[in-house]
Length: 333
Ligand code: NAX
Image 1 (tube, rainbow, N blue to C red):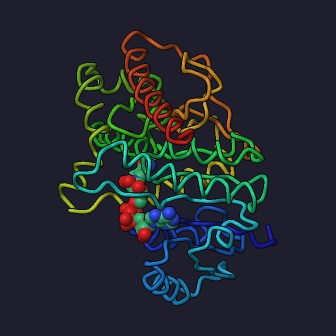
Image 2 (image 1 turned 120 degrees about the vertical axis):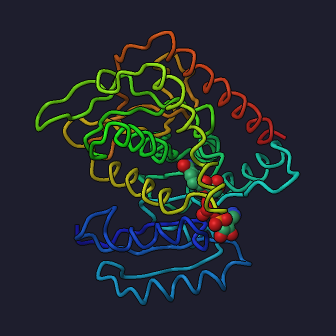
């Protein structure tokens, strides 16, 4: 890994990017030997702030960071790029209708999709973080027809990490003792955090199902699910700002696993375009459990879905279908 890899981060002057850029430049995502060029996209009014971020990146004196290109021009941002973190999006302002918010984001992700189509490497891996993440990723891929749809994903890793940490805390074990937690569906309050297939290491080499360790079905089906679904709002309430450090860490986890692969048969959740498995309509950008090898994800298939899970998985699919239809109407208009 000696050739410089070009990586784009959008929303680069924002708060998630502030943590994310540090981790990428340090080597947490593409490996400790991979030199990087970072292109930083934000909107024109933010160029002054972005210049400050560039100054700080320079002042970190990262050995791997060979070049930094701040810009408000999508062509410059995406040219020759192999991996993109699309963090920038239109935030919801007070009084803004859902429809208007969606329309503003369709505009952004259409334009970025077209730029990716024209200027990025054809094997680019695109991770959409900016909300509504699933639908933004779908729109982006729709406008980049020369790039395989499998190369577009959206982030539900923060939800997965939150779920894993909740279970670990409940059981008093290390975070990494808990494995194969799944997030199904939309990165929204309809998501379904599912630990029916998750396991926990209770002593060296000994794993048991999380359900057997927790021994409280009511908690796992109710309080646990809502805690994870509403965790973002809880952070905003406490911090007066939305999750940034944890979102950046999750974005790094997502892209690192995509780039380097998942180990030891472990699963991770990511929003990907549904091939029509688990009864989820083909073409929806839906979060599934996946394994990754050679930069290619494969959905973990054959998991038993009980009636409780089925309902939750369908509810979040319905929401995504609505979002998709609305977005497609805006595209056609
Ligand atoms: P900030 O408002 O701090 O930063 C966003 C940045 O994006 C700003 O600098 C803004 O100028 C820029 N931007 C806006 N439009 C742009 C465009 N067309 N091109 C390039 N840059 C543009 O928000 P931050 O806290 O960093 O959050 C960024 C996004 O992540 C939000 O949409 C947020 O909702 C979303 N999140 C997604 C999460 C997930 O798990 N998928 C969790 C965290 C976060 O809430």
